[in-house]
Length: 325
Ligand code: AQP
Image (tube, rainbow, N blue to C red; front, side, top):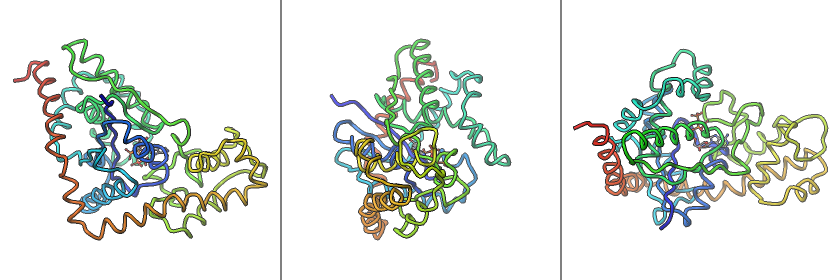
């Protein structure tokens, strides 16, 4: 039997190269190997300031772009989180099994609350419990994530183990799969920070739907250093980030990559080319798919019955085990 792979992605903004290389591309590349469930986690997206109409639109757009990236309904069941009520319901049961001290350690909450101090809500604090519910509801064996989600996954594992020990076996304990390369793509103009949908500067982010001109401009402006010598050196974070993206896209060995460039100028030209080569077919497919929004709406609900059956099984078992009637 194939292992079940589950992952989610938030419609908080436009999908970017970090999401793609750190997560989505790996989902696509491995989809024949696993029994996959992928979710647009829109309930997580209301933990930050948002425009309701825009959120609805972004939910469909994200769904469409995941399809354009290559997720195929033959191998991957896709759905939208808010349409399955069991996520929020299980999160409550998990909440009652997570120590406040464990939740207090979550670095993403600290980062996000620093970024927008006026909108620190309980939902944002509780995000990891809902994420644990997303994963545990589907008895997921593996979760393919970028490096930034490692701590949240650890919490999901801990609560699953604790619950199983305390009440009886209910949840599969999930294993994280984090790619060796691409798990943390950094902002191009501030390589100390990860490339993120909520970054304030657009210059640091390559969006999946960026034009070739925009990609070239952003890559050319990417922050490096003054050495102009191309080498994979983790202490030269700007250059290392560009080389990692190039490595991810071309799959060439590092020594070969280092030898192919005489300086940062030709590396940046080649990198922009590679990025566009990867994104162009995705963009074409995306624009074709979104011509018919009715088709996307149909796909959003296509697997809901299947998804609901698994989710209700797990939820009802958990509910029963804790003594809720
Ligand atoms: N910079 C990144 N490099 C590699 N992987 C990344 N991921 C996110 N940023 C990078 C991975 O993308 C998947 C989906 O992420 P998400 O949308 O659920 O939330 P996130 O991790 O919080 O992503 P963003 O882009 O930073 O969004 P905002 O700004 O809304 O918080 C995850 O597997 C993540 O690891």
